Length: 257
Image 1 (cartoon, rainbow, N blue to C red):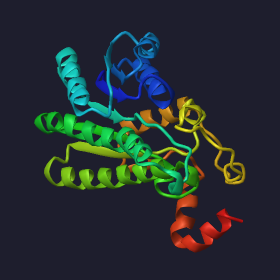
Image 2 (cartoon, one colour; image 1 turned 180 degrees about the vertical axis):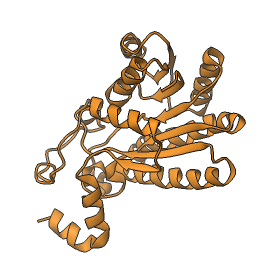
Image 3 (cartoon, helix red, strand yellow; image 1 turned 90 degrees about the vertical axis):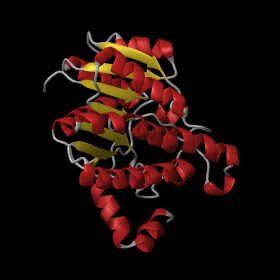
Image 4 (cartoon, rainbow, N blue to C red; image 1 turned 135 degrees about the vertical axis):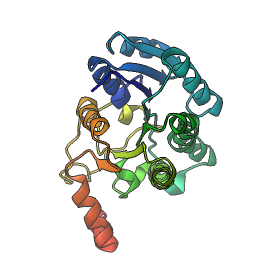
């Protein structure tokens, strides 16, 4: 692919870091955004020779607008914007506090909303661009109920993305909008989840093998080359989602056995 400019939030670890390294190796200019400056500097050092670090709190609209501004000042354009930042939680719905809900919704949903509203006007001006929103399989299927409001936030991301895609297809068909739904990923996500990650039996019997951030980055690379409306990254996910929606009661009965 030709040298282009990609902005990645949540770039200090996991999928975001792996994607920055992947795209940097392809000769792209990479804008790395996250709160942890030291980690961003480390990832940037392995992301090619054309990088920009922008410390960013994705829960603040002003920070996301600043991210766009600095990217355009440095490179003159943005070609791909990846809303990747996120954080999990380990609490059931009944145990959530309002503070829990606000924190998880801000990081996982409002950050995507702010990113969309920051970059879409630029894409409209140039008539092209690609927005990629990283969601989760859990936004479709209640496979890990202890993720509770995280799952709800990702479901909201799914819906927001679909509505944006249809709107832009009507008015600016050159802008592509993609939703990406990973399954289990072997990264710091589990460890960094608010209240941790409890041990549950469903993962081992699901047929859903964990993927590495590098495997997800390879899938994202192919998605950038050939945009699609939405993808599951794990081969086991589409069948599980189909079975869930075909018979919700049967699927949920099986989960609680």
